[in-house]
Image 1 (cartoon, rainbow, N blue to C red):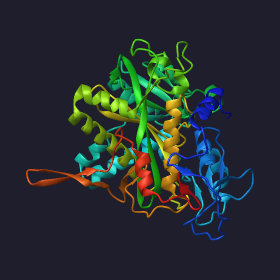
Image 2: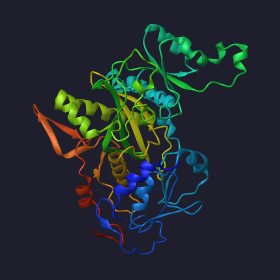
Image 3: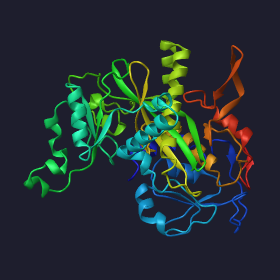
Length: 452
């Protein structure tokens, strides 16, 4: 992957000088200690396989040194392909960090995500009760094809005329997705046992999920959109998860209609799809920042309805992570920045569409670049290679700690109703992100640096 000319322009506009966004100026660095102890680490050797926003963030971080090819590294922002080929053969010292968990795909492959959520819901039904299990009813009815073809057909026949959406289990950016109303459109995914002799000799069909299409999405100006939200997990045992305040709504480029199910510009909100539309305007883009969306919804529906919506979205993050907690291979060297895709329906019910292990870090506009730069800089602040945190923080920059082996609540806010005190969850998605002020109060300067 190489950066587009647009990315280069954005980068030049955003960095007039070598200074990070907290306000530290680079001065002379003390020599790197040979001790494996992370605290006070003055130089961090990093590798990065991406050429986008994350590389810019790493290169601007005081004291971080880029390592080429086979040199030893302390921090690696790699793609999942590198992880698959190298993780099991790599020795990592105590302080080393890498940006994926070994089997992240338990949450980020569409079929495995649904499998784990279904199992988790059944466990809650059995061990806690159906009311608790019902809190997992946030993903559409889904089947894996071809393996669950017959189960899918039974469900399909119960609701004739419904629209379904087909998605390859391991592809991204809208590739391979299509909508259908008739079984004849997916005949090639019939289970192998029902295929003819000639068909059995052919290569196995790619695994897909067939998912009931949400036919009543919430529309703004007649346009469909979904949400991209960022969750950072630094441990699964115990589960420790952070929610970023920023995010965005991704809009399609064409007015919504169920009469044209073959038009991907109507139904798919992926930027990779929308930017190929004939009338796509790169200057205008197709995104709203999360704060803008929250203000719009509050003005239209009131603060109480929107608070309930965002609590329901928080529930999606927590339940999905708990559903894979026992199957993810926890490793103290690993962390993961997940990109959650959430769709709202016309009743303000949020639906989990998918979770991405490698959310796009390529900017589509100056505003998008600045948001992703803040996100990634704060991700490094939470991972804390420099050893500047105590480990007891509930907020680091734009990140709020939402789960730490249990729910996390705000210390400064509680409600009392009829003699009962209710604690408020420590989440602020779409709220003010005054990260610069908070970071300057929280973090001591980098080793060998001073405040500007």
